[in-house]
Image (tube, rainbow over all chains, first blue to last red; front, side):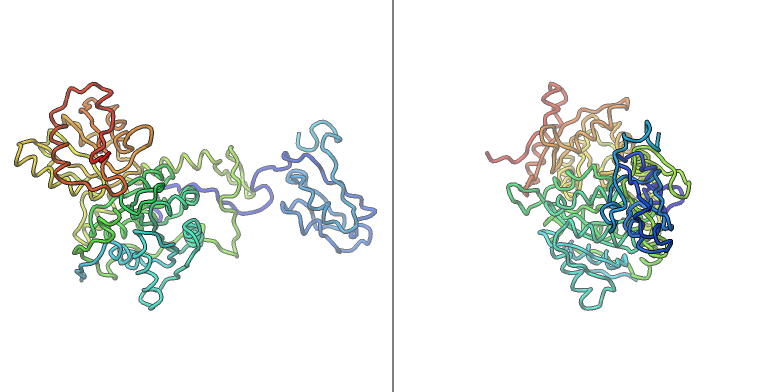
Length: 103
Length: 403
């Protein structure tokens, strides 16, 4: 039985976006999606969604036009790798406005 | 009701684990620990013990299985010796950082190379900074009592506990001891409950990458960074000493044994000189002390250090304030420095007004025989040497070298 005088501090938390902090600041490449090629965007149907399925950081939404949550997207590129129609391109952060989305 | 028996130290430890209601045992055999895990596997196989015995391929996996079991809210146990303990080392740090209430018996043995299966304390010494509570016992009865109490301590403070006993001196010798009644142990040690038990219905991240800074988690709760978590471990290691004393007092009330859980003094009341030692060596010194008192009129006593981590610095300093000389005899060292216990005792005394003359003796490394006559001779000689040059006094003396 744990003693109430002890805090027993551990690294344990409910999993979810942001559990490891705003990991978007780790990113060196950003996913950019071409909706004219993206299957759900093009068909208007909940289809494919492999980018949402594979994203290890739950940073892609399961919407008709998939959106990237740049607060948490680390830029790993798995979505671009998995997209069967090549709709996602990884673009170097420095090509965006100074500091990108995360200051 | 209790059960008196005559058995080996390894079997005493096995009985203690069984009485503690261990639910998972994961262990890899290594001399001199082997008979302990063999006994547990026998009982699991025969149905005498209701536990899962996981036969693993290494000590690293053994502790890994225990870490998993404890994370799932199950009372787990393992045991090892020497190189097996060192093979676990990475997982030792993990278990402490994850604050898992594991208990492990370490049957102390010298560390290779060169290969040795005989006793010394170097294995435990080398793991002293892992964040485990380290207890040292002196006889079979203490193996039983301390192992049972260790589970309650580990689960109260959520810090893993290592119960150290000397290979061969205790593991393979037979001694009479008393086993407490199983029902009474259950009352003393209620079932293990862990608030972070792995639960598929309530997923959690446990010990994933933890940033240097404190942060708000997904739920907005402020969580400690690595340094905060480690500081809490350090604080609570120190607080655990008081809890250990409370647990011992409760055990003593229920079972009639205990009373000196941190330091055990022998003939210390009027002692001018004090021997500090751990494990069976402290018991051997009772004979030495009796002889020196009787034959030479030297007022000398023994102080057995039973909790090595957290180090009982204040209690030691208080116990040694009245002494003229303190002789630390030990079976392990920090290579390139001096005896690890000696260095700790010295640092414990530094802030206090009375600093007795300190001497360090290294004995029994890799099972080298420790003749009581030799201890008598060296201790007697040390008691008459107050005026050694500082550097000489501070250099460990190796007793029993043959080359």
